[in-house]
Image (tube, rainbow, N blue to C red; front, side, top):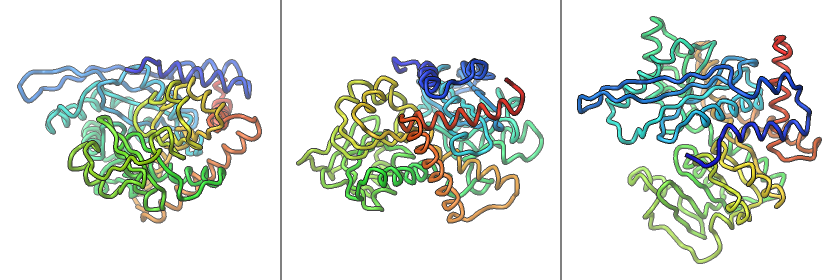
Length: 411
């Protein structure tokens, strides 16, 4: 667990926003905690015949703009503060891209890599049984997150439908295509980040020969690496939880993805060349795509990048954020940069409701339009208040959520 308290980071960010737009006290009070927080015990009969009890959480932060929406992560470091923080960030994220949803998050404390397929399925179904009364297409819609995937979402949707006694494909997004999933969803987070990265590149006057470093090479990290490499960007350093690989001439991303899929790590990839300055500290564009708080004050002091695109949630501590601002490094915040995932999740819900499914190009066109418009709206807030892009995003989000709360008569 990080030495930083993620939900305290959320409250610090709210304090910073309050200095810019003066959030009304009644509204700010509502933002100090989730509307509902659930902790559950999930008993699973393991392959050795013994029962093991796992702890799970669901945080429903705010639904003023629409049903709660947020992923479920399976990770040994899942904790209450993290889940609460992620539910708040999801609230801001859906508001930024202006889709009619609120924010939630779920998690289970587990090292899922140590589970058999049978144990993983029983845990997934058990989690849904524990929280299903709080779920529904018009109540709260989960999705995949760290160490969860379409297969797990399929199990979860099936369990919910068994409990409800009816088909309800819109209760979960990120499902396999053959049971109501959406095209593009697999790489939507990376695709959305690519669109806003390109907007940032235009603002800074960077070229396609810019060097890129990617920290984290899971689903989102590997997909954005592929998108950038195909567009001619030079990716010089990539890391995962076990180590990193460097090639100052640019890594062969197609081969690296094949290697990672086969070996479960990038470590040992033979295509390396460190004859030059191409570490994380030296790249033009840095993309943290791992877990929270990966860039602290010490790391921030070393970074020479012109732009950081937060593909992960909360990868920069508030203290590091100030240092990066002082160094005039453009940080594209997580609540914008990785909002492509929830945007296409929303598209999936719409398709489920219509029982009519769109082609890939149509989804990409809709996603690009939303991401570019959101970047422009946040950029205007940044200019208006002479602040960071992150604070511009928070201002836009909080104005929209506050407006919905007032319209409902909550405050």
